[in-house]
Image (cartoon, rainbow, N blue to C red):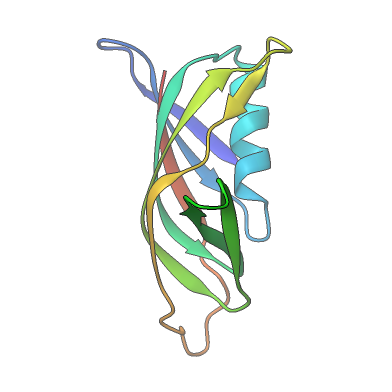
Length: 118
């Protein structure tokens, strides 16, 4: 993963570029813990080699997962990081995630880019 602090105006804004095959939530969580970020908004675009998305089932009061086992574009991903009970950064479930299953002929999965505002 590559990271860069791009702004400190009204809070810190980082840009993260994940490596191919890197698990997005684990990488963002590790980044937040390394920098002692306990509250942040996360915005991301890019692509995943595979993903597990889901919808909240109100009757069951839980998320129902949907596996996408092919490359998909992330059109938008919004989420939060909050301090967990253990004092470490804990990403909240993303909201407003939209994906497209467009296959890229002759290309492997592109890197994913996210921006965290802490």
